[in-house]
Length: 102
Image 1: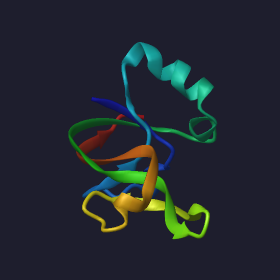
Image 2: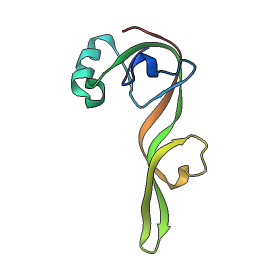
Image 3: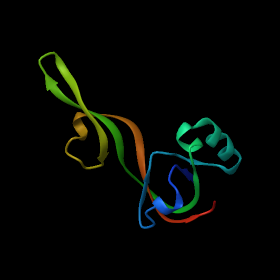
Image 4: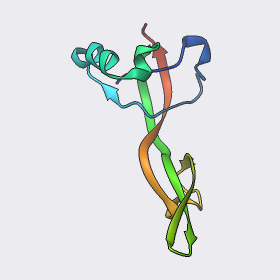
């Protein structure tokens, strides 16, 4: 699968890279770079052989007198005990076994 990440090559962790960016097809890759402000700042293209869901970027809530109150925004791994108190905003994927294309 083709993946565009907003990390420079020297910033990549080659045993496990986490990203909120989705995979793209080759014809859409140039369009994705133009449309995404994170990718416009700098992009590294990867060919990924193995990927799995890791968790979510989420808003964490806690009980309050008037219902629930947002208290934090953070990355939560699946299995985290805080997940029932979170509203997910982005799926985070773990990329493994990849090569840098450009």
